Image (cartoon, rainbow, N blue to C red):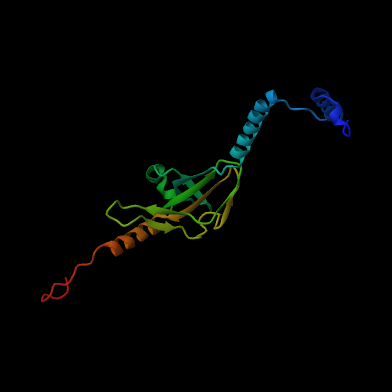
Length: 185
């Protein structure tokens, strides 16, 4: 048929092509099948996109260093209550932590963790406090957070308060000297 296609009708050529394709294990896709195949393909692509989407939730958490090595992680609301009921077990003080929870299947590399301290519209911008690699938690930086895993980095609350105090002192306007009266006292 290939060499004499002009001798055959279109219907005969289509039947010949159909037989050629199906005899070799293939199948024909008609116009009526395209919409269903496109919908199935779109659903498959949506599943792949969902499975490969980065889904990391970041939270501010509290913690305490216990008697045994390690940190007890807790919600920030629980710090005061724990201190009142079990303060003797949790020395040397409260910790502030950043928790990265990977809810997806795709892993992520965390290069740093920290907090922004916003003091309102009168300030030029939030102060950024970057957590040092202090080994309070078992993970340093950079850190891989695989799918369905959680990592937490902690910093003592007093260090963050100290940073905030230094930043406040630096941001306050200094009194100006008044001519003839000397430096402000």
